[in-house]
Length: 231
Image (cartoon, rainbow, N blue to C red):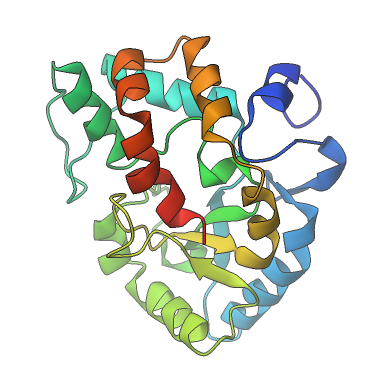
């Protein structure tokens, strides 16, 4: 592993971008692409002027971490959530389990978090002392509602410095995620190198849960869970 937890396996495996540590920088304990830092700081300063404290909750994620999230959800070690963000029972059928995981978790190797250009964000000022952020619809409609309303307003006015939401209603089958913002000018150049053929090869040689279901349905999964978010 190098300084940012990017292993040689990750360098080979990614379908979304070729990784190079020189492209990344640490921001508040999270790793992001250097190209987004300037606009992130502008967005943070702008939101501060409205009384919000922009804070990152997740950013770059290596393949291994996304794979771990996927496999732990499949094993029942992490809670599965339904479309409303509420706990649900773990399906016994492999294909049903696969779709249950996909409700809130991206396919390893195809997650936008592999890019380093996408961030999960909250308003730190709205968090009660000791509160552990869950990144759920209930939070977006509750304590973080004013924050997300301001973000929506800024995006609509083209004042969000290149950051936009990609997981929005009516786009593919992934549930909307108001907390997930992407720096589109930077992410677009990495999305061009994605190869579904390469992703299939990765799954064939990786110990990933629901492997048979993934391989049998990969083309349709790409149409519903990957390509709609390449914006």
